[in-house]
Image 1 (cartoon, chains in turn brown, yellow):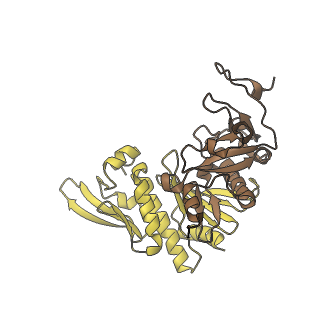
Image 2 (cartoon, rainbow over the protein chains, first blue to last red):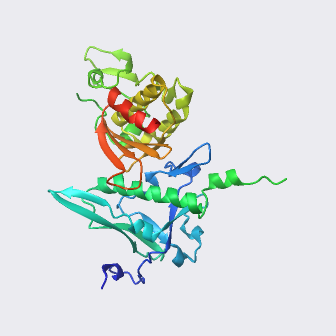
Image 3 (cartoon, chains in turn brown, red):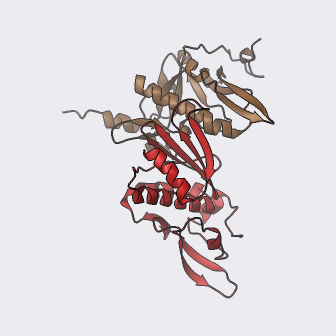
Length: 176
Length: 182
């Protein structure tokens, strides 16, 4: 059995494979409502995502599977001010050039999206490496950069799933 | 060098409300990587203990708990660092000031592009600077006196990214800044 299909002990939740074409939602903090700034907006309106948008203490950033949220990105928001950006699973899995050197042996990491449902969020999935990172630096320095770039590209092509509150306010056309 | 705040936690640092107390002025001998440093000793007793309100650089500094700068271009960065300062150890804060001041100085002196960085704090209380310019990105993470950088110019992790460590070294930082500014 694929390890991905093995539910964690004590968890009765149904686990399924994440399809390559699946849309994933990543929560982005509103700049106005958080000490952490997940993106920078430039005067010309261009936006770049910070590596902080994909920081995670466990080195496995969380995403939600859109198909299990009924394509409702609002379910990924923690507060109404949060934004949500989309990623496609196959683009995350295409991060296949992360490597490290351990005792003279090159370790190449396969980045995957694994369904890790929680009781409170059945759509929850994580961006995980195989094997585990030899050091935090590999994730913090390299993988987060790549994920931020993917988010940049997604934003240019498809826009936000939900804009953070400060951008919503900015774009709101005043009623006459 | 041993100071009262070298290994303190961010919480301990916060208790002192960004007003730094040093036990010995010898700290300044160890900070020679930042040539613009100056100090404002308030009291110096016979036991050589000095309580000082430290002004890190002439570019960005702390005065009465407020983070200030003489340059309007850095106002927002000073405010942002003030807001986040409760999470940052004193030595990290010092290095952050010195790095930001030096990069700003390099940009001004060489008439290079300048923009404020995105400033965040990592899980280990390190300060993270991120700059974007066209298709290039330059990041610094600062922890205590160590500065690591990452240059990114594409999506290929092995071929389009370069990382390393640096100090407040004019020629090295100039080459990094010329790279992002070009």
